[in-house]
Image (cartoon, rainbow, N blue to C red; front, side, top):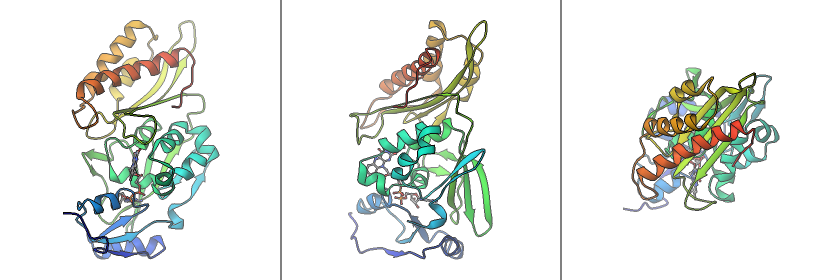
Length: 296
Ligand SMILES: Cc1cc2nc3c(=O)[nH]c(=O)nc-3n(C[C@H](O)[C@H](O)[C@H](O)COP(=O)(O)OP(=O)(O)OC[C@H]3O[C@@H](n4cnc5c(N)ncnc54)[C@H](O)[C@@H]3O)c2cc1C
């Protein structure tokens, strides 16, 4: 059954303290709404169980992009437009800026927020592989104070996460340590713009140059191939210190395919996702070896 647009209550306290107090006083009653690009779609489809919405759109406390010496703290309420237009985000975290450019159309980028993408927790969400590759951490806030958790492990299963009902994501922190890394991302969808991904890869890496040039460090992350976005930590360990040659690329394809759990759905087949994921991780390493640079 489709919902009647008037069939919900919306309050907009306008500051973070009042919002988290409301979430704490009436646990589970209030659903935060930021840009509403997921919530209102669910609502219109009759899939929203909560009828009391508390707006966190434009809360000043969630809007900052703070540049610190060792990290950048991106307010969870920042939109894709803010991300893709931010000079330092674009320069130092191009995978995140590219994900912002890929997300929906311009109207969606003006409303959709990074915090909303994380909590909506779609396995196909575009910004999440980039957050994994950059080893992001989340600052969560409630009336009990703040806690900081690594983003890897935050999603515990399909649409489940380490977030209490009275908590909000306040900010996403990314360390400023990837200046000399090669950054690679690919989104494979039905078309170039406004498509949900069949497979999405975000990766960073650098070589260890010497008598024999080998892989120094890599971070590999994939979306749309499992119930949660995946970091391929085991494969990262396997390739470290290895020369990039044809044998390694074959091994990487096999290991990638073994590490993921893709499904058949309306957008693609498990088999297609599996082969493409393996090919893309191999392509990343090939380009890393060739000294290339790819952001999209
Ligand atoms: C036309 C269209 C195209 C789209 N295309 C893409 C795409 O290409 N790629 C993609 O990844 N997504 C896409 N989306 C999905 C959506 O735009 C994103 O997931 C967006 O980031 C959601 O942000 P929001 O602020 O609108 O979230 P909302 O809809 O406001 O909220 C989503 C969920 O997050 C929770 N939430 C929001 N902010 C916080 C916070 N700070 N702390 C705690 N909980 C919070 C809400 O309670 C809700 O459960 C598309 C959506 C539409 C309508």
